[in-house]
Image 1 (cartoon, rainbow, N blue to C red):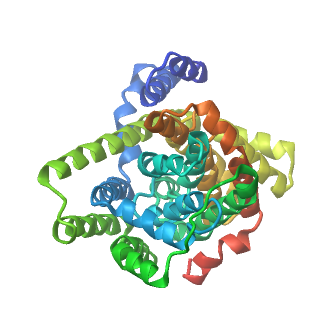
Image 2: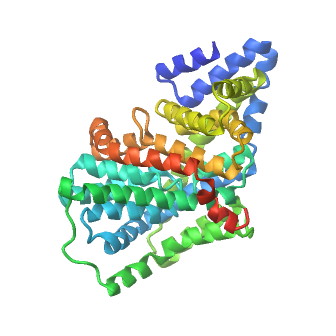
Image 3: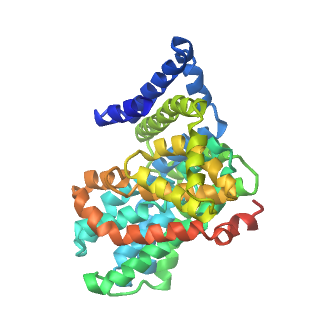
Length: 424
């Protein structure tokens, strides 16, 4: 009944948070009537009363400030100087800029929106089709929440009690591999698609000049990651320092940050954070109902009954994440599925950090898979391209990233090299 109500409300177009909350309340009432539904406010509070959650709005606000100061264009120019001379240079630049940009926003949709307004028109002007330009942008957008700082890692680490600093360290190599795989796909398709390239390679002097102009933006992830990894600050403190750093740059260095603009950034940050927190709070009610009925254990028993081979169980977990990701919002997936599936990964012997990066990368990939992929909708609304056309051009990148996901899942020593090196 509860599951049917949830999907019925989603079918009617109800907001995800409302569907979760109403379904959870119905489950509580089914168990113990009005006595149990009176517990809902405390469940919502307990679901949100997690200190690291405070880091999320700070990271979002820091990204908003850095975007407003024009850092995006500086990073794009640097990327073009480094790889623009290759065939498909602007597509390669898109990917490399996503790596640089990841240290600012940590959000796939933010990256997709920013590059959808800037790089997609530039790529069209150079002769790329709009669909292909959007596909490249969508493929690169998931680098943002994989390389630290990452909003989804903050939520995952807070919910599951996993070190956020450790997750940040674990995400560095997979994020860079996503970039490498996508650039390899662009290179392999360059001649067949007739992708353009710059006629002249940037000089060392030009590269150094652009590097100096972009250094303030590139230094932000060093502050965030270094402070967390070496135990100097907590993730929340690092996020607040990032805001202060961005404010100083915008106010005293670039001098293009006004009080009016800052007010609008705070409002936008509150809107984005409020939606996420409302989903998490509502999902806490449904999560309590799932736990009360021992549904996580039932699902784990089903997986184990299918096979006792850890490799097969891991593949089934990934396939479930990818399948549900095609139909459900990423935040809902994280809050509902992580408490169900993460204990199962512990049973098959996965390191918590390894399990975390598998979840994060699988959820990120779902951001660019139709029909619910958020990055597809963002790019479609920003550029006017059809989701069907973007999805068609996206297929080679999606296949490459799926293969990389399974490589990461079955190569723990590779993935955990950096966090182990840093003492996690």
